[in-house]
Length: 225
Image (cartoon, rainbow, N blue to C red):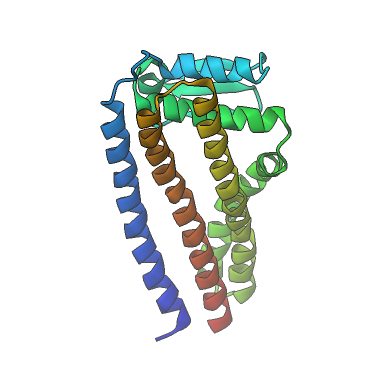
């Protein structure tokens, strides 16, 4: 069995694991979305409290459509919360909103890894498209150089995922700290919030490992050629 075959099997295994992890995230989110906050705090209210407590007044909290589509956009400084999180007075909503506030705090304090990830976004977008084009052309025309080029371009995705993992972990740590400091959740509710954010963070780790395996497989294929 070639190394490329082993990498292919690992990629499939990790793909299945990522699907399972995604299911666990959604399941845990639904569980704690059903647990109402004792103080009636919603995701939008929690976000507003956290931002103001950290002296951040130039970030706009926006309600968006979709489920688990929450994100912080450092380009236009918007905290985008899905409908369920924005108006939800539950543990999951407050936890997710606090996590996105963690990114806003990172931006306000010029957290180095967040700044690096922001600069890598165009590199990642270009690499994700160009890498597959180069690889496909490499196989069609039997050009090892194109396959190698595709692997090099794909390494940009690996680098992005490598930087993303600690950024997300740090945002969750900041979120839990703020929620506890400001008393947005009770001690029992905070346990649930920690579980929601921990499981969500695992998906970023799986994405990183999957991209590394894919890169090694591409390099192995280029070597075989």
